[in-house]
Image 1: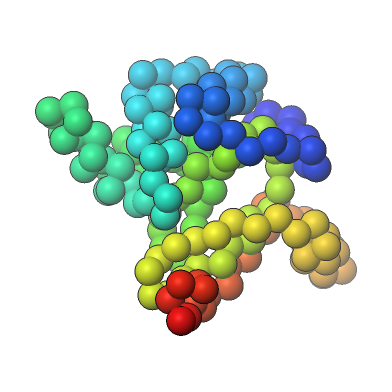
Image 2: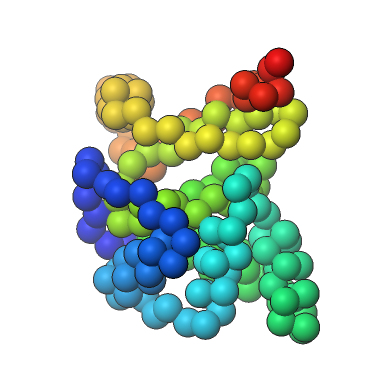
Length: 156
């Protein structure tokens, strides 16, 4: 996995996001293949968490031939390991990381009504979770916190 900057990050979108993801993956010693590029572009197109099946179905339709969900899962796992994507555990779905190469813990606000997952960065929460784990002699890799509830639009 690549060395990443924990604090100063820049949000990317569109082609800049794809380029930042490609650069981060290559810097990590991995190859950016056409299939990996297609999976990342499809993932980045989604505003809400997307499953491997959603991505496989959309790529299959666009390519005119079947893309196996298992292949998409392997690529998504590689993306998560290299901080190009974030996994919303409770939904078994993924979001593109809009600042690839920047290490931070995953804190998600997940709407039970519409499925929106908002990623928030809060160093104080992350640091406290890591400290609590350390007090129990537990070495953290990447804490993931999910808060379930209703987004502002669904709460109205």
